[in-house]
Image (cartoon, rainbow, N blue to C red):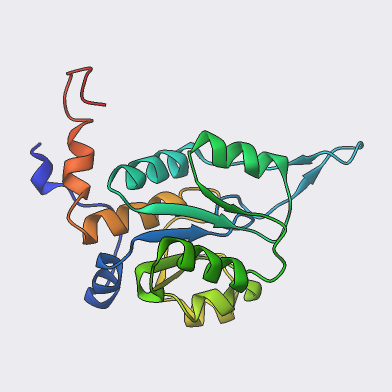
Amino acid sequence: MKPEGLKPDFFSTDEVLKRARKIRLVLFDVDGVLTDGRLYFSDNGDEGKSFHSRDGLGINLLQQTGVAVGIITARQSSLVAHRARDLNIQHLYQGRKEKFPAYKEICEKLELSSDEVAFVGDDVVDLPIMLDVGLAVTVPQGHNLVKHHAHWTTRNEGGAGAGRDICELIMYAQGTYSKVMEQFLTTDSTSF
């Protein structure tokens, strides 16, 4: 199969693709977006989370195209810090009950306008950012009010490939999807 014929498996409107073409930064919430939203605690109080490997690869591939990635979350977790390091995510803001100031701080730091930013959230605490960014994304299990204000809903649920969906949407809209996927259609071990 020639890479030019590749297209991600999702439905989007022309308006969503137009918005996605401008994106230079994707910001993710964690619980409910990069995880399924459930919190696991041991008897000792240690927290557990489950991340999907497809989201991680999607984030890495998107970063290869020059789009920056960040995380803004209300909770504080060493697991999230570890995952961010593992994925080379440079913009990690944890313990931010008010997420909007962190979003504005990242935009200022990277000299980006709001229409160059996508945010993926699932609950009402994410709405202040979602109402300001160029591309507001949610997941199928997101709160109804969030779904109402999102420009796009991922096909996969949070913690089950939703992160990969948004990464592929942006790569497709920006014309980098086929080139990125081409590296997996060869047996040449130097391509990846």
